[in-house]
Length: 406
Image (cartoon, rainbow, N blue to C red; front, side):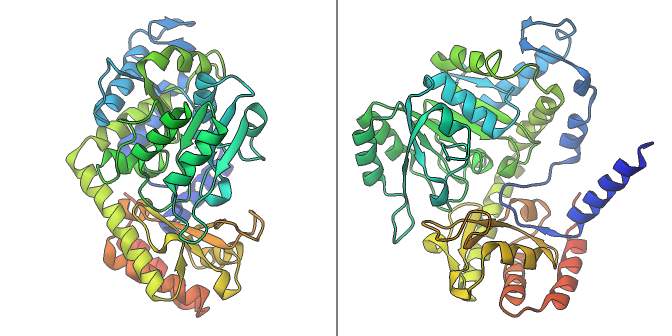
């Protein structure tokens, strides 16, 4: 590379990833094939519009077939009929996909309902600091104050009372199985459309280790990284009758030309997720999360909901007089990378909350299993409680060498 500054930064980032333990629940590692597709000649093509209806020439030979292939693969992966469901693969990110889905379902200013950010929801679900809160009116449901679990009876009661146009199910920091059937009942009882944001669990749904939202949802959004192990991107999967509204919301409503190189990489990721080995991978992600959470609890850490059913967990550090930000920095200092996170009804500010979030997708991709999760939990304890930084640094480096990023 002629640009030596960028070449150096790329090398530094590769070295950082190879020599640290990535426990951020929303991160993963793609295969060499996904990486190759992302850096393919599709990066050059401007493709405003949709297959067969582009605003630029040059799309017929490969671009249109590529976008159609992504749609076919997404439907097949989740067992959906093309007569009943449609896919839009052009949204550039999960937040964009959510905004476009809201726009397809509700006029600006209409009422929406979702899980509150500090209860495990997401910024794009109407958080006051997100533009979504300015474009629609939001009410938020909470988790149970003692168990921190979703209370579907309370959600239904609030939905009936508030009568939102759209009821949103989906989280970014909730470690239990989501009962989409009960969300459907809440939506029906209140006259709402049901939208599911499955960004975090998309791979687990594909791997058949989390219940599918599709029998119950009107529209589903997802990122394509995280547990799905693809590139940064998004999909909007909707009932067939919503396809026109979704497509208009994406283009020309919110975007210009799609990133065809990312769509190519998504196609490869969907292919990989359809293979039998991906089911084994997804099951191992959950097994690893169980092992990590179990060992952390045995060492005295408080896990929100007292465990996990999926790929992540949130640890409440209040009993140690330590903030999530402080713990995040301590762990990163030895090569364990996680993210600070609010806990339900947190008394601290979001930039320095009481919790820290751990996830197992990336380390599972590297080939680690339950044995390594137990070891890593002990390392976390040694750093946060024992303050044994130098010893843990050596353990982290040795473990990274044993399980390299391929």
